[in-house]
Image (cartoon, rainbow, N blue to C red; front, side, top):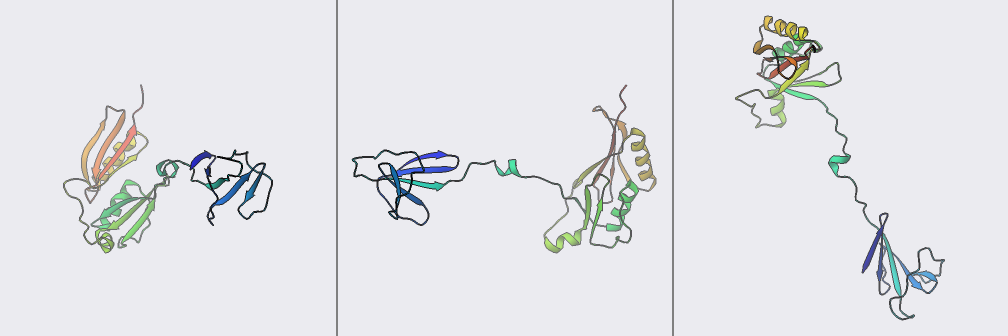
Length: 207
């Protein structure tokens, strides 16, 4: 069976008529196309020469084929829903991020799950270890280093230093003191109550 593809339509030419509920079969006899019900109709496709003698029947089979489209990764629109933090102590974690400047509604310190939206629209979400184990009983928090790293743009080098000092004064742990990084940013790192890395940074003024 010969196949020709055009705009997602495949045309197949075979030597005799067959019946099927899935396909449309048209038979060609000289200058008109006859459906398999035997009723003549005007030709609606280009003439197809008989394969053999004039008594031979040529059948053109029209059926849809799937067009080759873009891959899933090319057509998928990806939107970040939230950044999740798993904590051993919801009260302590929320207090740290409030001091950092995240607006978190009061009265949620005992909640199993908390959401807070940052000024740029990104959502931070907290879950207690017990909450995670409610649907993942074998969950074990990672050890040997931080489980997640967050970086907050403080806008100016002075704001990096000010925020870092405020958090240290509140009793939180410094990891890297503020410094002028060679890639052109003022940078500092603290650890939240669960040991997660929290970076503060800002572009350095150009000379």
